[in-house]
Amino acid sequence: MNAIASDLEVCIMHCNESIVADCRQAIANQTLQPQRVFEVVNISPLNRAYNAYFKRMELAYCVKVDADTILFPEALQKLRQAFINLDASKYYCMLGFVDDILAGRQSGVKISRVSPELKSIRLPDQIACDRREARIMRDEHGLAVANMEGEILGMHLSNWNGIESIVSTFFNTGQKCLMLGDQKMKLFYRLCRKFVDTGSVEPLIAIVAFSHGMFIPRDEEKNNIYGHKVIKHLRKLTSNKHHVLYPLTVEKIEDETKTR
Image (cartoon, rainbow, N blue to C red; front, side):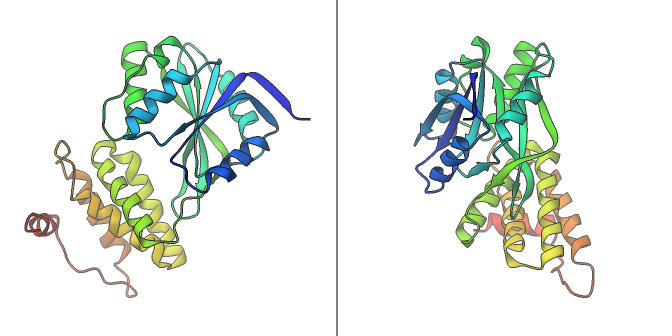
């Protein structure tokens, strides 16, 4: 029988996706079992789901995982041990990394030290809820986010079988890039590498959607500095004899989007 951590709980966020059953089973298979598992279901927009998650925390440590993340059996044990070894006066949470069949290594699971300060956070309706949460904890309470390096704790199993799924996900990621900058550009570079290495159409579709999102920003995110980086990298990527990129400029793309 697997050990139970009496100070550990897990929150699954989902909208009744079919994959959630596999996520639950992966948690049931953990070598270190949480004392409690709770779910935040069908709450939107995302900030309201986060606010519900904050309010429902009860134990000393809370792990948040999305429905499309399948944790390896030792994930909770490794994540909890790495986190409790950190200086509690400096860090309030730690990000663990998972592998995505298209996007590669990315953050996919988070363990937080439950506190009155964290439970009291109420996020506004905006993108990048994790980033907003981290900023509040840093600016108001002097606590930071740590990364668990060197370990892949599971798989991110988004449905990349359909074009609509790829386009919607990476268009939104491209929009986020305008606010989150280099953090999301690293994902773009990984997509480019996937395309070069495999030649498959899925990463190419993701690259196009990501780039399109860069130039259709939200009203408060009109700075196209990272759009120039996208164009520069695509030119470098397609500069050999096997690929041809039509010589678009940032200004031309902007003009075309304005006429729609």
